[in-house]
Amino acid sequence: MGTIHPDLIDAVNVEQRQAEALLRTAALQTAILNSTTFSSIATDAQGVIQIFNVGAEQMLGYTATEVVNTLTALDLHDAKEAAARAAALSVEFGATIPPGLAALTFKASRGIEDIYEVTKVRKDGSRFPAVVSVTALRDPQGAIIGYLLIGTDNTARQEAEEERNRLDQRLRDQQFYTRSLIESDIDALMVTDPRGIITDVNRQTEALTGCTRDELIGAPLENYFTDPARAEAVIRRTLAEGKVTNYELTARSRSGVETMVSYNATTFHDRERRLQGVFAVARDVTALKHFEQTLRENEVQRERDAQHAKELAVLNQELEAFSYSVSHDLRAPLRHIHGYVEMLQTATAGQLSDKTAHYMRTIAAASVEMSDLIDGLLAFSRLGQAEISGIEVQLDDLVQNVIHSLEMAIGGRSILWHIAPLPVVIGDPSLLKQVLTNLVGNAVKYSRRRDPATIEIGCAGEEAGRVILFVRDNGVGFEMQYAHKLFGVFQRLHRPEDFEGTGIGLATARRIVSRHGGRIWADGAPEEGATFLFTLERAP
Image (cartoon, rainbow, N blue to C red; front, side):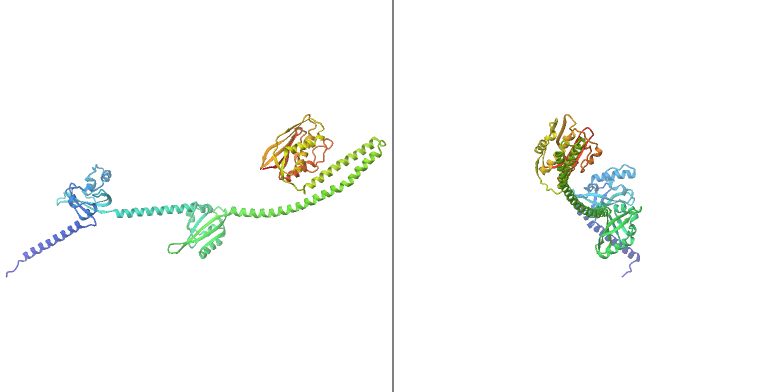
């Protein structure tokens, strides 16, 4: 048996290794063609598909037989997107790139790495996002003989990206909503960590402290209150008890303005129930405190007023009793004086000198005037105790009755009466007749120098649900600066020798109107007449 030459052995080994390498390459090529993870598409220099692997078939819905030597790589892309890419590359490289295959292969043909996102079009027309890597294939001399497009379906990643964007947007919306809630609160809101260091505030806190949000964050909360120790204590109490309500503190701003606040706080935790800090609300209660102080002062004043009213009521009762007693006790001796004077006048008729007879007449007239004063005072004192009925009163009838009763006082004088229709009111007929008698009687008396006299009675509207009635004359009138004296007892603005009277009539009218819940007042001018107005409840 002969010996094998060593060179022959080496040649056999080389061929064997080359065969093995070819087998491995073939296996790799087969693996690439059969891979479902990515699409692998190879084209010739004109972009016509030459290789279409299993991954491309599954991704795009075509079989290799349908596309090889039939479709171009551009047929699998969105045409508008390819045109837009061509325009963008034209701008980038300063060259005119047509919206065709060059849009996909321009960079790769120049040896530039080109990986981009693109929209792929399936056989059924549906579209999906993909990431494509384009590489130029060259022969040994460097000439381009085709292109390799490796693509992966980007749908899952894009959906994940969109979901992340949606979550980010929801988070931003939630943060905006939370911040809006915090900022829209009328109270100062503060968040601190467990040490009492401020971590967040709203604009109301900035206004309360006079500091910006950036200045407040990181500073101890107690720095912004007049009593730091008390403020620090409430934080410790909140941490210990979980919450604090209506804790009174006084905030002090940078400029020194102090504000009383009601401090309410609660702790907050993370998902694992770990303590994160304290959420606090400081409500400005300055106005409330002032209001409470005013209420307390008003309550004290009401108690004083009530006590004063009781004392006045007792005093009025005593005064009325005194007035009644005095007027009643004065009547008896006055009657005696008047009676004896009349007896003396009768007994000495024709025996006395003219001067003595004048003295006797003066005494008699004075006794009559004094009797009228006592009667008026007695009637006035009784008004405070008299029961008042509240029935419907026909003022039209009442006025006619009063005018008829004053016929003797009128004495045939020429008086022009202007009486408007009057409403029905609620009151005591006899007392209201006394009011009208006094007012109309005064109008008759103080207009007697006028020829003719004019007296007007009517209604001037309403005040707080009550009718305003008036009696007006064209008499002597009065100075308005003395109007406040008109309704006082025994107050007179004219001399007794000019106009007779007791000075009690208007005081009586005021008391009656007041007891009916109304008010009475007057208006006038010298020699231009007077108007007396009063209010009464209108009948429903």
